[in-house]
Image (cartoon, rainbow, N blue to C red; front, top):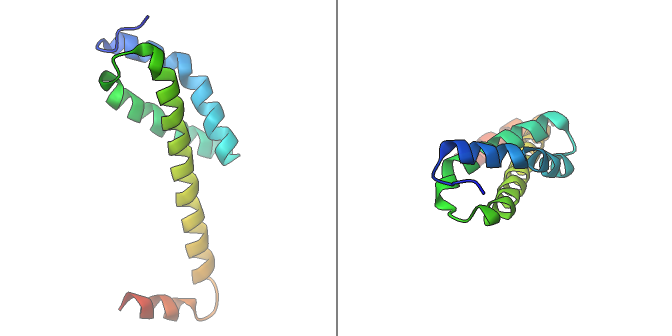
Length: 102
């Protein structure tokens, strides 16, 4: 069992769960590059917060939730960008966007 207060232990846990994290992200995002981005975000967040999890047996389920949240956040961000770009591409949208900012 890995020691959550030891950097080597945390790295081992992250490596052990990396494929599962990527799989979750890929299922949500359906695009390998987006999944890699979300996976990296999830693993960085997990590394940052790992010491708050004192029971390594609960680390896996928590990390999978972090991965799901990361993937859903990225999907929402991409959808907002697509909608914004699609809206600005239509005639009159630029004027409407400018009017709503005032």
